[in-house]
Length: 188
Image 1 (tube, rainbow, N blue to C red):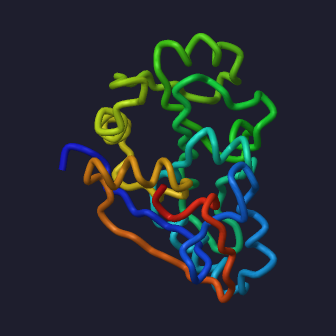
Image 2 (image 1 turned 135 degrees about the vertical axis):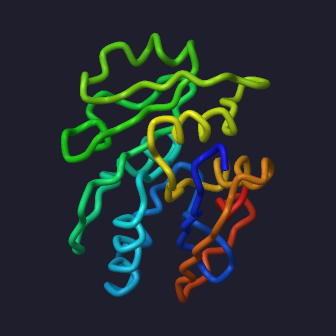
């Protein structure tokens, strides 16, 4: 395979919702997640070379994207898809707890010029105002990243599905209903 392997992991309500509303953190699910499920997520994280999210996830959740609660041989890269260079300089994914890669466009690179030097910037092709995700996954493989866990929102998940770039999927279903026609789903 000329690109890295992808594993989509998502937490969902019974009715397929991944957040209580657009722009609202999915961390609200955290209080309803049994410790065993959280442990399983961290076991999954410990087995991959990278954990990928979009800049929207960073903006709404400010995740650390690190492995906790399980022993690890090496820390996976934190990988952020950020075409326009929108992530704030104080985002947790930019701290020194783990290595970080930001995948961006030439336009986004200019806005990311003040990012800490421990963060690697990868410039990808764009297609129709979007990052070329096939190009991104190829470039990650060239960096030695063989497999990634995708913990994105409905938009990035849809983009990857529509390009046939999801190799495996792990879904944790939580015992509640969120409802609403404008609430994000696994694939928006």
